[in-house]
Image (cartoon, rainbow, N blue to C red; front, top):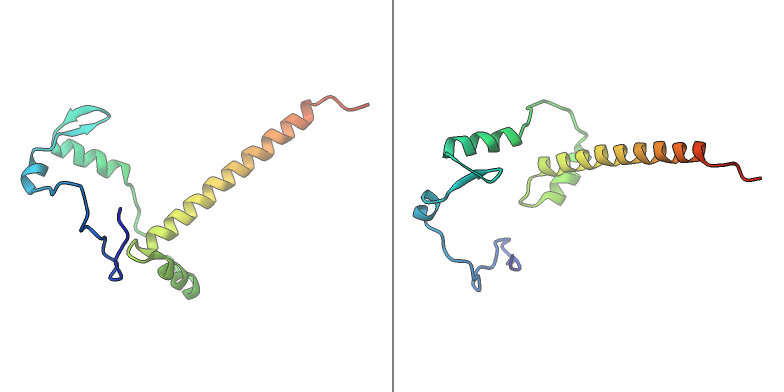
Length: 112
């Protein structure tokens, strides 16, 4: 993507991509796992991949302000979700590494 202008919109003055029309989108072939499917089946598959649950949660104001300042156009809730997901993944990684190290230490021959 090109550099953004001061207004925050992408600079498309030198964009090589062709302009797409509604006709182009209407002719598109929908595929799920490489198999041709109807538009309704494709939409159902997309919805199934993005499962979200609406909840109400109290978050400290400085935390919300921090994520809003980082978010820009992306959306601060998306950043919070991504951050929480990374924390969960890193905890799993840390737990796995600790387990592997313990197993290796137990199976290692004692040094005489």
